[in-house]
Length: 276
Ligand SMILES: Nc1nc2c(ncn2[C@@H]2O[C@H](COP(=O)(O)OP(=O)(O)OP(=O)(O)O)[C@@H](O)[C@H]2O)c(=O)[nH]1
Ligand SMILES: [Mg+2]
Image 1 (tube, helix red, strand yellow):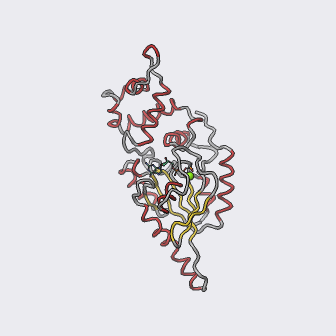
Image 2 (cartoon, helix red, strand yellow):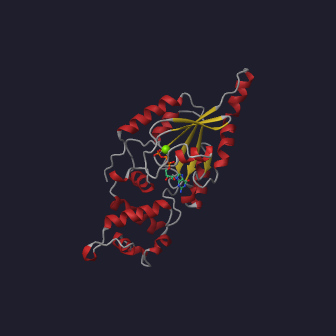
Image 3 (cartoon, helix red, strand yellow):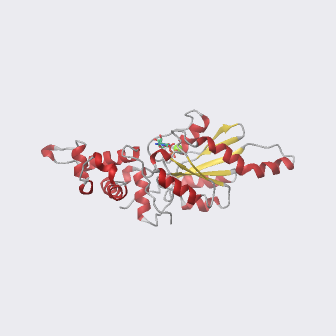
């Protein structure tokens, strides 16, 4: 599957991010809890250098709780980690206290120098569609930042005050130009970080289907009792994607299957397994 995933607006997003970084005290690196490893942008790690950082895994409501626990423990070895649901609200209350904890030392220094403490500036960065704008909205308690169920919704950078001492910068989602491991591209496609228009949805569905057969076979029982024999035809039949002559429209079946997978209607899944 060859994917054009680094369009012009993303190169611009990267430039903007680098420019803004010098005004920023803390970076929230937002990932997708279904991909605790593959949703972390290596480009971003490079750009951040030693800037204080909190890793937040969003969409925990869609991820397998067993793996969320394992991954948060693992990631916590290198930085503070929180697992949240930006739309459901779980864990979001821990974010501002964690930012304040990270900044306590710097604020003390400001005070010692007689500098009036200014707001803490927090940048929120991550792959497209991982819920950055939703998280901003949850933190301010209103729908100020535009969100949408597809990648590439936020285009410009936007500062928003979320607390009397904290300002947040919402940024456009950023991918990196080359996936060293093709599996990472498929995983990002599966969770909706790459525009569907550039994906081969049938191929992607088959890959997701294999992953579920292997790791979450129970989830596929809704389509058939013969889970291991399930294919797009079977899903299409169950979902009524028939064309003239009783043939199955496998593209339609793939679209429905991917939509159900992403929405969590099939269950809670984590695609990144054993931490390397
Ligand atoms: N189930 C679930 N859905 C979420 C959560 N957070 C965000 N979403 C959904 O994910 C989609 C993307 O959310 P956005 O907030 O627009 O994501 P973004 O990271 O700002 O996306 P870009 O601006 O395109 O990079 C929307 O449909 C949200 O409703 C969550 O915690 N759980
Ligand atoms: Mg956004």
